[in-house]
Image: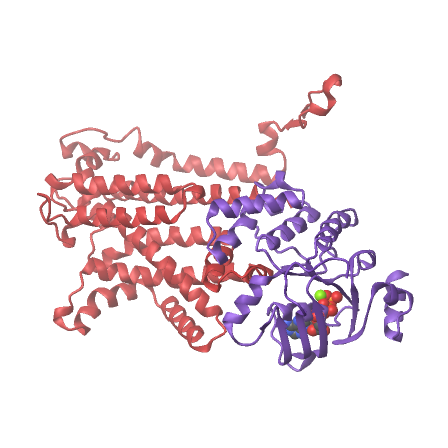
Length: 363
Length: 253
Ligand SMILES: Nc1ncnc2c1ncn2[C@@H]1O[C@H](COP(=O)(O)OP(=O)(O)OP(=O)(O)O)[C@@H](O)[C@H]1O
Ligand SMILES: [Mg+2]
């Protein structure tokens, strides 16, 4: 075991903390428990070798001839061939710059919204404008862009829009529900409890069915709300019920003294909630909020059950092309990788946010 | 009184007449009477649970009383939200546990309340905040978060935050009891200087040094009642009531 300590007698105060480096052998095999885990991990990796082989050495990376894929390796050439279909679904190919631009807009807006310093009413207005622009781009029907009905939207933009819109619409709804549930008044509390418990008690698939199939049967014919819109409504309601409970947990963690101090300063009630209580409540529940956000991103894939053409539906239907030898695994791996990137990104971001919060308190 | 009151109002800054307060069936304040003149400094003391906090929290309506009258600068505290707002505009409060907003910097702690309750432009609010942070002698901490300050520094920020609202009355609820002994002095110094400027103050504290130095009158409470009110000299040298003597003996020894 090596101990590296730099000491300089002339400037003892400036001495950096001693650094102790543990050798790798000790990290992985230092005690019985670590050793067992290390052996198990190596065994697992070993057993995955054939799959790794399938995915890399035996794989067909580029080809114009689907027949070459019958050899048994992974057929990544298929992904290259179907990339546009998986990403954009049946959106008219010559118009696919529009959904591409939408993806770009979402990425760009997300990037500039990352640092908490950027959060302001201006940014909120920016997001509302950006989302309006995205929907306008997708629909078209003006400025020489052909009209594309939502039935033809598909792939990654649908997944991203459903996730983004359901979460951002659910959030304010969840705040209202959480506050209602903590209210002293009976009616708001009862309404909140009822809606949260009913929605949480139903499976999302059930909600989606009700929204997309039952609702049109129940409502008069003239009330046709778009199927994508109804699906979005179901996702939003579902997310709101879960977010509400997470936010309620955060509200419970804010000491009573915070509200009292704000009241004593003469700050109006709703401004206390907005500027003093909610920010603290939300900071306290970043891990479960992240969790809900990630679950909701993945939940959007359930819309394929009611026939909305999201990225997972596109991947599945791409693989049914009879020209190719049923490359379902490749298709799902590719789609899965995109989901993973999104969700892991959210996860990293939340860790970064939390570090920012912890750096403000050394006690 | 040595100091001229800040305002021209004659008579009482705070009038408390026959106030009763119950928590469910627990009788927390019993027929409390107290008249505080503008510019007067009152120290309230008494054993734990005697109702000191409850009394001063009734003065800015953090608690509501059920009987009697409380009038602050001519405005009666009742169900009227307008009156409650008016009173809170005039009354600042400092808490035992500081209650700074942990998600805001020290500067924002002092500036944001002005912006939210008075619709002050941000520039003016921050300028005012800096002036008051200088006054409590911690302008250099303005960009830090409360969690990064010592208890004494936090309490001074809390005083600055309250003063930013230009209060005519300041309430202190055991402002030094959560502090390490070496930090009590820096907070008391700020309070004494505030008293010297003629601020109307009601201070719940067991710091008898402060009471002797700065108070015009000392109020002793026990079991929800005001037992004795006297000038500090009289209060400490010749308390009239047996319970007061008993209490003073306990905190001095
Ligand atoms: N919100 C409340 N609900 C029920 N009882 C309360 C509440 N607040 C205070 N009490 C009770 O009222 C009595 C007076 O409390 P108060 O906090 O005013 O005492 P205090 O004199 O400030 O004591 P301390 O020195 O411990 O702060 C106590 O017996 C307390 O238990
Ligand atoms: Mg108290």
